[in-house]
Amino acid sequence: MTFALRNVVVLFFHVYECSYLFTDDTWKRDRRVQYAGLLCLLGVVLVILSQNSDLYYYFDANNVYYRGRCYFLSLLIPSLALMMDLSLLLQHRKKLRKIVFFSLLSFIVLTTGTAAVQLFCNSVGLINMATGLEMTILFISSMSEQNLEMYQLLKKKTEVEERLSISMMLNQSVKALSANADTDAAINELLGIINAYFDADRCYIFETIRDGKALKNTYEHVRAGVSAQIENLQDVPIDVISIWMAAFEKNEAYFMSTLDQEKGSASYNMLQEQQVDRLLAVPLKKQDEIIGFLGVDNPRNHYNDPTLLSSIQYFIINSVERKERQQLLETLSYRDMLTGLYNRNKYIQVLEANEGKLLHDVGVAYMDLNGLKKMNDEKGHEAGDQLIRAAADALTDVFPGQAFRVGGDEFVIAQDGISEREFTEKIDRLRKGMERRKVSVSVGHQWAAEEHDIEEMLKRADHRMYEEKKKYHLTQD
Image (cartoon, rainbow, N blue to C red; front, side, top):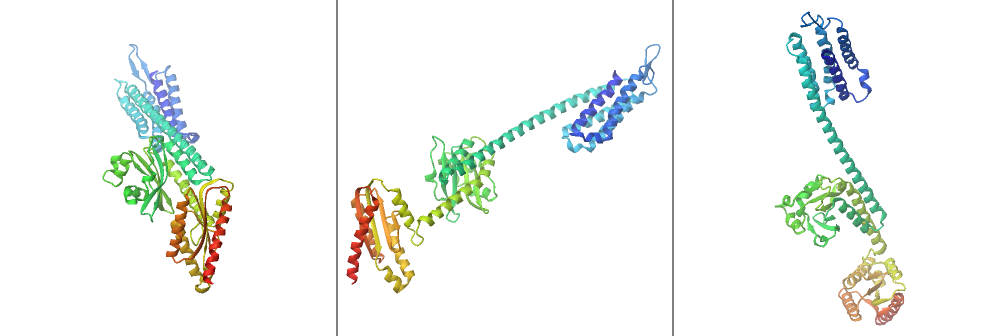
């Protein structure tokens, strides 16, 4: 049994080693694998044959054990198989972790070494002792390897689940941005999704202003019970976050694990007032230029992984650019390029929006410039344009956001929620503002406590303007 088990153990070791070295059928092409296995089987066959001969050992008449003339074969055959395993091990050592490599190597070295000693020493079963020790070492290393593999599998599972979670959040984010035509509402919805993912107090977007010298908080989502800070974070000097900017310029996320990390910096007091103890932020870049950043305050989950924020920044930038394009289109569609006032398109839109509505405390005015044609004829259109801009400046001073340029020299004013006295005073201020700017105008105005038809009201104001215009022409004649 002892002689047979030597070969069986070596055979099992051979199979065990090959399971680490070969993950596919490539072992079939290596003759050493086959020869080592055949040697072990040959060793078992010779042990069986030795039972009826003195090939390996025999007993004398007094039942005393003696080695046979071919005893060395019992050691040589498994040792040769182990030498082949050694060559395989050294060839494929890079495939193995160190603990596995050295445990396999120690089995081969100790077993063959004790076999050599055993050949000249008959007093102690060194091979059996070494085999037992090595089986223990292999068992320990195998368990360590399995534990490591289990840990890596669990880690991989966690990473896969994390990536899946991020992918789902990205899909949800893209859907939120694309499903809503209102860019502001879409971005606010997106910030809510991000805030929930991180279980944070706030999620926000800052954009650079004043040629990158300052920042303004343009969007913010806060969880229930947390105070909003967007009103307090306008025109923030960019030097306040100089440490963050250093990371952003390297295209890196900035993670503040504790508020103490900011001690000594300009941002410390600001964050302390907002009760921010942890923070994660990523830069928003356009053509390698930092145009702002996206961040979360006090994240409770995923705070050490900026993957989602880094991935979402592309969609944020696209949305901000889309809003800018929308604003530009609105400016082109509803703003007069010469004066900056609302144009006729906006005027018609306002009329349509208020058609049939009952308006309260509403005042309207129709205004026409006097002498614009004469100015254009005598001094040129540039002088005429300056006259129009001067009139627009006066309108903006008194009626910001309520004035429309509806023709070359015609302007309309419409304001609701204003008392008759206040409206009349503003018309007087407008006239004085025109006089200071040396602009002659004819103005007709109308006020009503209640009005169903604003268009009809504007016609009455237009009629009054023409009456004033007639008086102007009489003075010129």
